[in-house]
Length: 414
Figure (cartoon, helix red, strand yellow):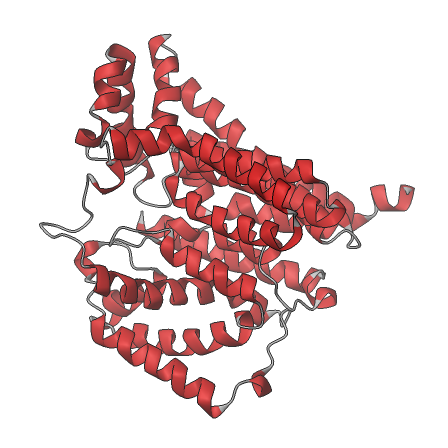
């Protein structure tokens, strides 16, 4: 035990986490805005927060007129701080330290999933959250997305706990926390399908009915607000100048763009060779089906650079080459690799489907999947991980180098 506590790698792990925390404080001091839009979103929402503080009922019943797709829940919470005239610096500092729960609960998830792995590696992997441009920006500039992810991570924690001990009470906590998560960020609501799908396979009819009733009870206020009071804020603002969303094109846009974003976050796994890809499992028929899917998506693809967003490969393709050709080449490889990596499990395919479903609007931002995909890869996805390679100093260096590169790239464009 003493060796474990005081060996060089343990000391390195401890000091690295401290350095990462202080880097977040430095980012706070210098108003870091590595996603580019966090600063603007925060001050836009701050005006709505002040409106809630001054005239709650009128603002609440006309929230769809505020031209924001964000949930009102966090804005309402911040309005209480506005009412007590707590200054902006303190509001943001409180938010930053609440957000620190995310890497902690992610670590707790890894601890359950990889119970036989040296905890130092799990701490270092959870520390990658500190290098996420989205986590850093939305910790520094309060935003509902990171709060939604935080509570969603709690639902993952209790789900993994349930898979371990089969205690029904953990299912209750899963439903409770993904419901809270959905109130902060409605995009997470679709993942209830994943959890309920897995519960249906394990639980008896009486337990299933209890969970369905709980789901209905917890979702009723949101359903009433959106559908009965007709305050559908999620579609009250369009991300496309002068245009309404086209449902068919929107689906195929997502297939291509989200495929490219998924493979982007798989890069450190591929470089470190910590995931087993069985190329021999793909045959000519599979390739033809994937090619047809790619060509159909290509035909309907109409995402424009002016919409903003589109993921890193879409941006590189348009910024460097002035067209989508590089993006389409990346996507073709992405679709094949994603098939090889994820197709072995129905759970994997369901999660990818829900990732597409969770973004109903036309605009697709990279920040929606950062650090969400990393968390999903290491918790809910059924991946054929090569643990000896993943949990090694070499792989940790690769993951940190990749994350640091992406953070610097994000800062340079903000």
